[in-house]
Image 1 (cartoon, helix red, strand yellow):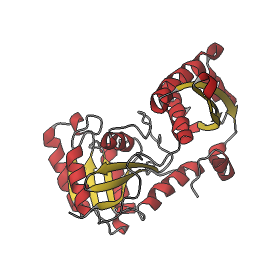
Image 2: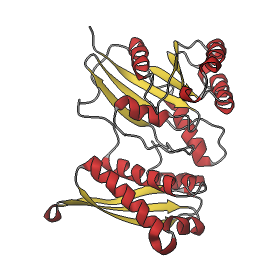
Image 3: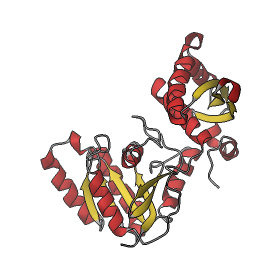
Image 4: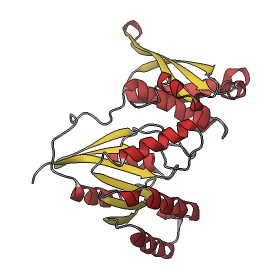
Amino acid sequence: MAFKSGFVSIIGAPNVGKSTLLNALLQQKVAITSPRPQTTRHRIRGILHLPEAQIVFVDTPGIHDASIPYNKYMVQLAVETLQEVDVILFMIEPFPKGLEDGRHIIGTYLSQLDKPCILLINKVDKIAKPQLLPIMDEFSKLYPFKAIIPISAKKQAGLEDILKETLSYLPEGPQYYPEDYITDQTERQIVAEIIREKIIHATRDEIPYCVAVTVEEFREVPEKNMIYIRATIHVERDSQKGIIIGKRGQKLKSIGQAAREEIELILGQKVFLDLFVRVQESWRRDPRAWAQLGLKVD
């Protein structure tokens, strides 16, 4: 059999489970996850190596009606990805809001494409089976999907079906990445995202959308057999800075500890993590700040 390879975009509304699916398909964490929407801010590539193929999955920010400039930019990133891939995995939730979002994305974006698209109905473990058939029937009439697959990304159900269908539409091609590559993210980017994930999990609803993390220093300290990492947490207001630091610095300390433990597992080495919090007013509304914070893709 000829070797197949290609790029596969995972798209959908915010918080539908795209990053959870990517991690499940790779059997390794390359994208951060949280119960809150708009967690993914970049196009994250995860590479799956199979004997007969190499699949480059592209996790994208959630597509939604954005009003804040940076959120509009994230949606633009996701939409542009649709033009660059070989296959599209379009994920929806089987709940009223999820179905509404799905109809909107089909009408606004997918209807303009001529690419193999597979519909994934995620979180089917949370609904009764009789509810699923009308959804599958409706969406089969909305768009000519190559397949409709009920899945549970969290419980890793339906993954084999996804791979089978995806492979059937991938073109013959070369191996784009070496076999030891799992993601195109650098260690600095991975560290920054892990820190941001811990902030999202540890703080109130107003914080996740207003925070960005930059890694200012990342160096090995051979004499101590460790890696020193200095990172800055950027927020938009003083009140947000206070929430992240917490009383007597306890919140920041717990965020740092949780992030350090996961970073050490990934890097396989002891880590000293130095965290600072800085106020950068309205950075989500200033395109110049996005580049400074490493949040803009050229």
